[in-house]
Image (tube, rainbow, N blue to C red; front, side, top):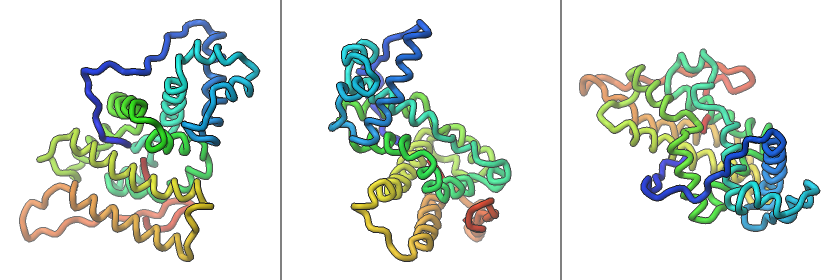
Length: 253
């Protein structure tokens, strides 16, 4: 998602303590699961480690023993949530066969469906992007760059190998553009869906969202698509395929 880069010379602030005992690992997983629900329901700043401990029936100090701080606990929760999301190239083979921009479309139209299936993980992702303090956000950015949980690097190489993306730009820059623009575009929908008491639904919203998706992808395509071989050559328009359970014409992360 995020393309912002942290200082590689500055060591990470939140380093998990290695745990090798099976019982300790199981307890750690229980804490992360309980904390994920608690953070999702209360937000980062309002969440209390003591309440998480009470829900689990354990001592508050036990959580700090495993994670060290509230920030480090949320960081582990965030990583667990983001790792559960599909990667770009997890799109069906028939969608991948239609190309880079068709894969983007596929994930965009599935955004709300995925949210309804797993609202907790998406709320954690939003909290990490917008509701955490700057120090924690910096570590989240570092994690996204180093681990690339959405597989954006492989996805961009996929587009380059197909000749769909311009090759006169640094690959890392292309990855950053895809991450940043897709993140902000999707997050605007996720925020509205998760806060329907604040963002009122509008009549004809599906049609408006379809138009917004097409306009967004058109702009992104003009920025990233490979340059035509000659001035008179028209840009190729991506073919739209019918997707089961979705509109016949035209996601992501």
